[in-house]
Image 1 (tube, rainbow, N blue to C red):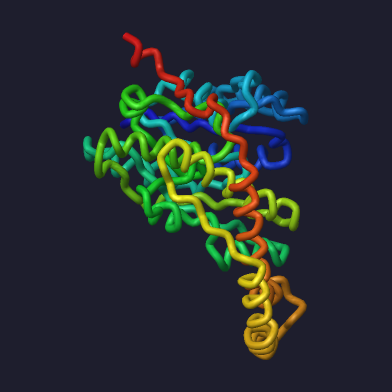
Image 2 (cartoon, rainbow, N blue to C red):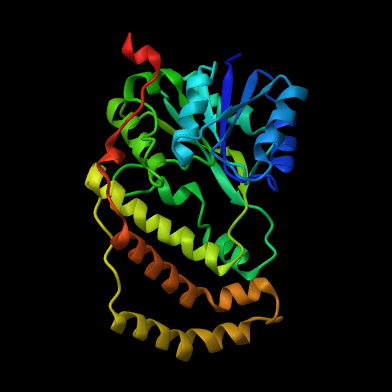
Amino acid sequence: MILVSVVIPIFNGENDLPQLILCLQSQDYSHCEFLLVDNASVDSTSSIIAAIAAQDKRFRCHQARQIQSAYAARNVGIKAAKGEIIAFTDVDCRPRPDWLSKLVLPFADPKVQLVAGEILALPGQTWLEHYAEQQQILSQEHTLNHPCLPYAQTANLAVRRAALVTTGLFRPYLTTGGDADLCWRVQLQFPGCLVFQEQAIVSHRHRATLGEFYRQWYKYGRSNCYLCELHGVELMQGFSWADYGYRLLRWLVRELPSQVLRQKYLWQPRAIAQILATPLGLWAAWARFRGQNQAVVSPEIRQIEFLEEAET
């Protein structure tokens, strides 16, 4: 049985950690270790993961305080990992009990270097969470169909350690877009090496407030800018104010009356999400375009860390 190391970067994760730990402890794949990497949290994350590691020998806690970046934290975990396969998820994710056992199956083929599992939505309470679920915002379907090359989000990704030795780890100074960058570098070295394992599922908590939603799409825009700099990805074209006005007017005149008549209970979050889908989508596009235009490209983002095996 292949040893799998699961790396989870954590920043201020005290509210999410208890449920995540239960999910990890429930995995039906026994030959695994869990590396919890605290990325300079200011809440009780550090003490929580230390207590877990003291109670369960499968868990190990590490600190990544030099660089405030989830990718730098993942690199700390990778360097400490013992497994032949390195899997990634996030603190706000909830892996199903058979997640790891399904995720490792494609690695039986030696040509496979990357495996993407599916990301579904946790049950939502707010209309924003229902909107994200309806739009399947975090589904791997979107990233696996990227026009440049397919890539998997690190909320549900596994990579062969040997591939990381060859291509290097995450770029530690990237704050967004690092999952695409890593997957693309691996695929350029090993063409056709990525497999989508739809049955390996984690559920993800969507943004529940307008502020979180805006920051999410703003971050996606910054990712566009960084990937353009690193890989020549085409930048998105923003809408003109006339475009926004036309789409909003069409929503008011045609879509809104139709949606209102179609909904049985207008006050329910799911109905509100459907009714407001168009203006919210336009706001997301504006936030993404703004993030793309305001991103600051530092020379540091080109730096790549390597495992010790790559230096010998």
